[in-house]
Structures are given as structure tokens and as C-alpha cells.
Length: 528
Image 1: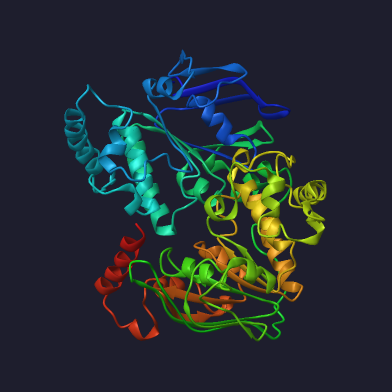
Image 2: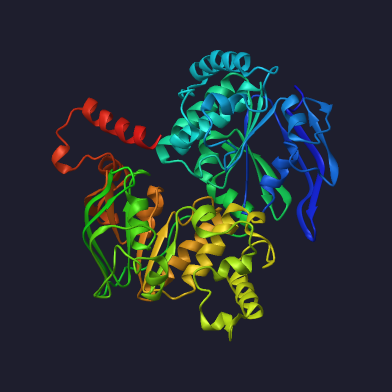
């Protein structure tokens, strides 16, 4: 047998009192897709950051193709043929694709030679691996799916034959994720070795050859994917049996809490993002909004949450909300009993350089429980944060950690805890489990259902169709800023919802297959 492409022996890493990795050993064979799964905070990303040179291990050894290799920094990793695509991309937004590709890999003082060489090689790589992207497009003008392609191209341009992808589908639509998997299969056929860090068991079962499981900083198992299943992997990850479905009793809808009539939003470029939305949500029910990202769901949450202006009529508990002017803000919305879990936790839900206890106060810092006269009662706030951390199992359980030092899933738990614990009449929640592990998904779903059962109204936006189908009591489908129709989860399926998400309604079913495919391609092009 050939040497492993990567072998780690006895890798340990601590951050103060937190032991992120404990005596880790792993072997990754060449030309395979090797999955690494584990709960948020299990140490997966830390381990791969050590392999890529972002961190240095406190002890342990790294072997690349059978040779002991010192990797003090990312340049050493690149020289060893390792490339990494991070969960949050490392791209310069106002640079072009081509400029990002050569950044850090320039040849000589003149950029002209490097850019010319990169353009030729980029064309070849794009054709070889289905990674087509406009080399002259600016990153800020590209969707997340295209930005991810640029990150992969950067690694391939630097001649990486070992590619690490950290939660690569966390920001992708289902169709973009499927395309990524085709790309990875193509890379594997060309002899590349791929390490896939993910918490999504479906992806592990679909794409990997071997899977390693981490729990609380330790490697607990490595198995052939074909010889295991989602239930066994979930139990290995969490250390207990996990429900892979949402258990909830039938909804008991009450009075209308949210009423929307002819809601319209026009963006700064004059494009109408919401085109006459009308819907309602009752107390004690979850209305799920399904749709491909970029079809108005974000704007709907933003205008309801006081982050964007609009026109039309919106009432909460019978009282009309201002959609423009100084009272159309998030603070006023909170005072009206509206809580909001935004889709983008890092840019809209948290301040990454602030401590956990400071983030828990955001939006609620005027709460009397957090104040003592003219001053904030920081001790009371920290005690409240510690209670929320314990209840929502945030790891590490340290309110003094800055938000950036928590994994993505634990960052999400902080936002979820802050908003759900306010006992709102209406919860607006966008992508509640994006980047969250299987155990935390189960917990977050249980908390949302419990809020519903307490008689609260919930408007849920998610690109995960299985999440929409399992959590929602009613489903509304959005396409191009409009509501295409409503369905009951028991009376629909992913295929019907997918067609509606592509703008195809019951009256359109007579269209030819080519017309349907054209509609789908149009939708995917908008978000890609």
C-alpha cells in the first residue's frame, strides 16, 4: 500500500484552559475524500488549521506522503502541496477573480507576467474541473457559490494536491452544493486528496470514502463510509442517540399575530425585491418560507425586523408597524414583541471582537435587569449570559470568550439564546441551523417548537428544504420577490416545492422539459 497522503500523530493543542485537540491520530489515504465530522467545538477546524500552518501544535508530528514535515505557517503548507478553503472565505472583495488568484503567488516585480500566466492556467483549470468563473469579475459582485469556486481555484493554482474544505456547503443552496460535489468527484478522479469538514450527515454519506469522528477534542472513530450509517455517526458525534427528525404535535393556531398586505421593497439600485407580498402568521404556528437564496426572503426578514424600509401594510397583534421613518427601526420592533435571528450571524447578529456577555446584551442593553442607575450592571449581565450558555450548551462555557473564538455553530447558539429567551410574540428566524452540528440542530429545533407550543408566532426562512418540511406547519414558497403559493407539509414534497422555487406553479405544469430546465437555470444563475 502507498503511504498516506497525510498522517497526524499525537497532535495536541490548547488555548489557555481549553484543550481543543487531545492526542489526535489520523491517516488520510491519497486519492480519497475523507470526511471529518463532530459537534461544533469538537476541534475539527483547529486540527485542520494546524495542518495548514495557521496554528502550531503544542506537540505531535505531521507526515506528508510518508515524510515528517514541519508546517510553521501557511506558506510551508502550500509548499507541501496543501490548500485550504475556509468556511468564511479569505478573498479581497474589491479585487477581481484573477487578482485574488495571484495574490501572494506573484512572480517578479511586474504583475503583468503573473496575471497573464494566471489567466491561461485559470482557463485550463476551469475547463478541467467544472470551475467556470469570469476572471475579470469583482469578488463583491459574485454569489457565494462562485466565490467558493475562486477559493478552490486559488488552491489549485498553487498546485495543491491535498485540499481541505471547512464546512463548504454552509452558505450554499442545495443546487450549488450538488455542483460542488461533482467538482470534488472530478478532483478525486484526477488523484487529488480531499478532506471534507462538515456536520451534515447526508453529505458524508453521499460524497466521502472514509469518515473520522471527533468529540470534545478527541478522535473517537474512523470508519469506511459504506460500512456505517447516519444514525451510528450521529451517536458517535454526540455520545448519545440523536433524533434525526423533528418530533412535534399538531399545531393549535390562534389569533393572527403577523399580517402583511402588499409589502414592497425597492433596493438602492431601483430593483424591486419584494413585489406585493401578502401573508399572515398565527399564534402557535410556524410559517416556513422556502425559496432559493436571493428571491426576496432576506429582504422580507429585514423589513419586518426594522433593518430596511418598505411600503404596504404590516400589523403585529393588530397594531400597524411603521415601514419608513425613525420608528421603522429594530429597537421599536423589539419593543413591539418581535425578536429576530438574522441570516448572517457574523455581520448582523454579533460583533466578533466583543465578548459573549457583551453580545448577549446587544439590542437589549436598556433592559432594567442589565442596568443599575446610570450604569450597566455588568455582573448581572454576565450571570445572565452564563445561564444562557449553560441552557444552550455553548462551548466553551466561557462568557469572556470573544465571539470570533467560538465555532460557527456556537456563535449561532449565542444569537438563538439571546432572541428566544426574550419570550417574543413573533420570532423572525433566518437559517437557524446554518453551520450547526447535528446535536445542536436537534436542540435548536426543539427550542423553536417549544416557542410555538407556548403560543408564539414564528416566521422561518431556510434554504434547507428538509428543515422547512419538518419544522413548518404551513409553507409559503417565494420566487423573484413574490409568493408562488402555500402548501401544507403533509400535502407536498421536495419536488413540488423545488418547482415552485423555480417559478413553476400548477398552471405552468404544461411547460416542456426544456422550459422547466430553463427556468431552473435562470434561478441558479441569479444566486450563483
